[in-house]
Amino acid sequence: MISFIKGTISYIGDSFVILECNHMGFQISMPSTALFRLNEGMEVTVYTHLAVKEDDLSLYGFLGMDDLQMFKQLITVSGVGPKGALQILSSISTEELKMAIASGDAKLISSAKGIGLKTAQKLVVDLKGRFKNELPVSEISSGKLNSSNLEMAVLFAQSTGISRTQCMNALSKTKLPDDADVDLIIDSIFKNLNF
Image (cartoon, rainbow, N blue to C red):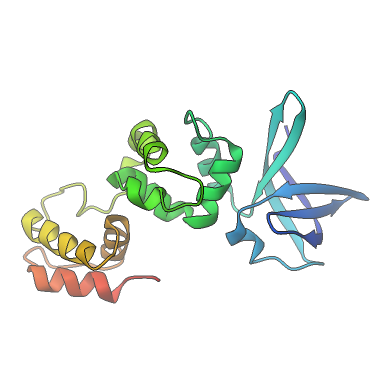
């Protein structure tokens, strides 16, 4: 197994790089989010997964170990192959994806190119237990925030087109008083959103 390759980027394609290492060029498929961070001539370490089929050997690479681990989780789900997993990670960051799975937000996952709602729902069902610790304290009902106020604030934000995962991610960036009212929670969501 090839765990990582350290070398120099000699070419960047639409969905892959060619990484030169010891006078050999490795073609490595990567998420578009990673490709945007690279330049030709840059020295980089790429964490890899070798996908083996009867008639093909393909390398999939990531700039961080977390992304590689998420990729490996995704391809364990029936109906999500390496290319589908790469599409998901090109559209949704690993952190957002963990929260989407943990909160059951199949709609956000299905926004990835080539991933239908049924596949996204299956992914949530199969992986949800692995990421339950990724939810902010407020989402897993620790009792600190008034749960009805939280739910009303999140529903309002969702009515404006913001996903539940984005709401939870925004709320995880701030500390609210235990008795926060709906308006304060809504303000906190919009203040901490990353678009």
